[in-house]
Length: 456
Image (tube, rainbow, N blue to C red; front, side):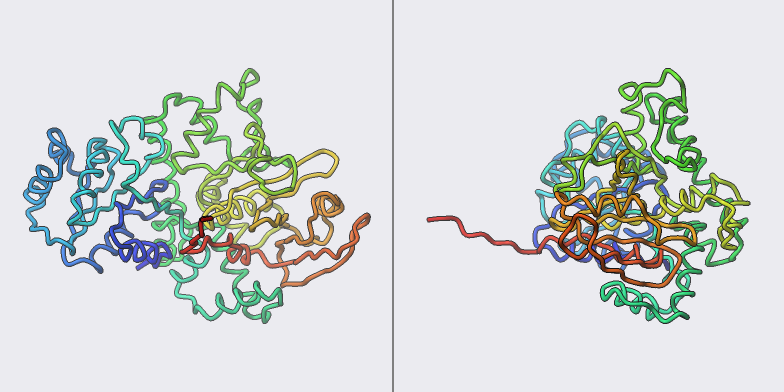
């Protein structure tokens, strides 16, 4: 069984009084169905699943009246199950195939007797087919590929190593070398295998990268089939998707439309980039013009890097020879593209807006994140020389931005440098940390309760 951190999110949802329906969204093959099944079978006396892709006749239930008084007896009859109020979970899978069922959620939630989870793929690109979205009756859970921590757990690794690493990250201290070396080896495996559950399961079962590559290739074929079936401008979307590895392999990883066609213009392709992002297949990383809070107000929608949703899928597109070289730690490949894709994947799953900074007078910062009002530059260094970072030094000197802390993730164990940059009058800290510690960088959580007093 692959343990997912999202399971606890489902448990919190169940404990919420008068909870809404839960929409579990995400790219294909990230494990949505598996997660919901495990949760339903473990936490409800009655669990029923209707998959609208496998059982298209179930769509007939929603062709007439959508009120709960009509629908619930039909659902009970179709599943040949007696629903128990307060102890029944009804799971609508591949709900994008039945838009009327999505509309009906409003009335089923209002009825209040049973719990509902919806799941599907491409929900972000098929929402226009829904007659009326159940706004106010759904909460959403976005599921991503397995994180590095989940990957380690799937391999049966002792949790003590990860707990020690998490503590050292918070304390900005070095790990014992034996733990550091072990986690670096596991992170190289993660770069190659990625977090798609089927690929991880095959790796756990066989340790055979040839078989893992075949699983990854099957997923990529499925994504291309989705593009052919659902995308409006199939040629544009497919061209963008297939170009991602090549664009990331360039020194300047910014996605250039001119590489697709000399006549390509952003306004003609914008909806195609959005399609890939909404489908969960690609992760756009937008440039910001200044490193000041709030970062999102400085985002440039027309300047971006485009990453794949899963590092393992990127590696599969690059080919088996590159996969083997990464496992062997060889330096004669473009580690930068692979590492940045993994970082974009991890930061996105952790809840950050994926952003970077580039300007001619300063250079490029791989990623920038915001924690509360604090802006933190992040550099992902793939080579042995990681203490040379001219771009980072340049932005730390900008007095008006007030930056005082940055991360450089590298191959080596943790080290911290404190200095006063030229033109500044405060100390600035650069924390050098091993690659795998990016997993522990999380946004500040919004409090569960925030009660304010209104003036009298």
